[in-house]
Image (cartoon, rainbow, N blue to C red; front, side, top):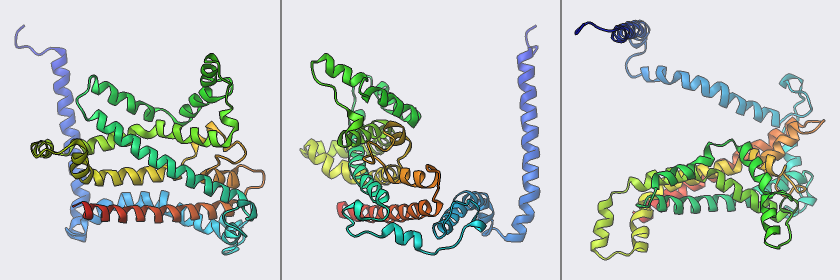
Length: 342
């Protein structure tokens, strides 16, 4: 009959009433807790109560492990529990930094640490530079009115959704001696190349693969920054006869600089912490040609039969300090560039 509610309408009404009831009970319970707390703490101090859960999570899972790592860096031995580890002070750092010639890792007591540090420096410089450049160019292209723009935006972001291990395995299948790339070279009448057995080739492909895998994320950030720039500025520049290069230099770059700094800092942190893709793709080889700092820390602490947790912790403290200083320098330079461009 017309006007008689069917089963779906009755179920929908029942769910709506149940939802309202649960909401009312939740608000009452919340009020029973918050009202006494507000009377006890006052309105201004209530903010500390709201951030307390996040502070607890940060303290338990980030701050406490950091402090424990610093303590481990000043102990030695293979025992895992802190009470079973003898305290040695700065001995691990002293051994880590002892070199006759810092430019030659062979003269250092921990030569693998300095090889990893040099490899990390090379990797970070070229990977971050290439990442920012490629992401900027890609975002500017995708910001234009091109055919199938939505499709290309999704395609460039797709590698970010893949697991780093999957990315490394795919490229390892492509680059190995009997892989796809060498098959193409042989089909063209060229000699195959041992990409994974040559240090220069291995480092080059590690950088290119990491850029390919992560550029979609930074492209998305820069694309959002480009879309926030008002089109009226470009229209006004076009009326004044501004060329494309001048518009990029005087309009796009200054307004995009805060977003560029975010991309630069995030890509730097990611590059310094790179481990999974390189470990699966090359294993740090050939030899130690692509061994980065995080892999050195892992191999020192967990990759041998005689783990040296103290030395691994000392190396991670060093890496964290360098990363903190580099980030602060980047932020300071970014602030200076913004004031100069303004």
